[in-house]
Image (cartoon, rainbow, N blue to C red):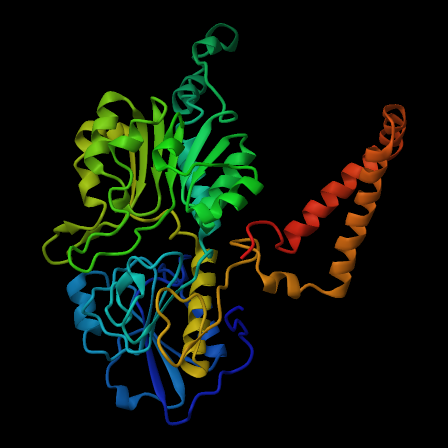
Length: 479
């Protein structure tokens, strides 16, 4: 099932009811005429559904227009104290967030939606924290919305150092006219990505998109994931590794896409914290590249420091939250431990403030629109799309909603095909089957004749089937 994405019909609300939703992250990343990020695409979506958009904090709830869902846009909120002050008393029924961490003390009686995959930053106890287990409110996300953007940024991080051609140096010399291709190019040997091994931890939406891009570059892709994913990983032509360290063995690149996992209620530690430690890093090919565009806590920073010291890792690209207290300037967030590596290894680090997937305007707008739809579904129909953790009593889980081509193939994908599409697929398969059967039954001399006459048609049928299956979102694991 999918969230209600119609921006045409006004959603009917009980005329005596008022609902309030806090939006505490940017929902538009392109700059408007005023030089600031423009939220108007999402604003228009909200208003088309009958909601109200306020570029301010909630004041007197009694003065709000009844029969409406009111969205209060406050993307400047970030510090823990600010969020508790703004939303610690339950004045907002629900919240939409992207990167902002919502402390346990924030209260949202109805729901929370995280724009993007994962919910590690959704720490409110209203729904039981980032795992969404317990609590009386609904926790949701918008998986797959930024999967391709993140995957492309992962490849950008890899391509910065592999192949290791010193592009900057060569440009400078060429621009100065200080290079002779015939005599000097031999001094700059390099190796292409083709044939290199990339180890991926996790086979979710992002991990799978990275795997597809890496394969397009000719890389050997090894994936460590839950055993239930093995059949589909191998069916898509990738190598499955049951053990994490075995996945890393001899890899030229290690990229992490597994999430924080469950948080221990007593210690506050996440299950996957420190997942990539010395045992994993030591198995990489010497001079490997580490990309952690998932969560900063997933890497043992002390082990990474040692791996950089001894040359086991030549380059590390990290994307994690970094927060600065507006009053004191003190820093916090999962990026903080990595800053200690800058003085010694700055030239071999690329540190981003959780920006890899959060600076793509179309993805952010699409995710925000979907989050708005999911809020309306919860309020009006008690329907939960993309639930995380426990679905409270009285609500109905409607399954997952992801962009076309992202995530698994579902029964819904198969059942929504038209009769013409079923027929087109069947026709291609029947034509292929006839040619393959003819080749199977024929003697070698006859096979050569069939290939000479029908080889082009057969390959065209293969391509047609693959393209149509891709267009109809029929490629990938089945769920």
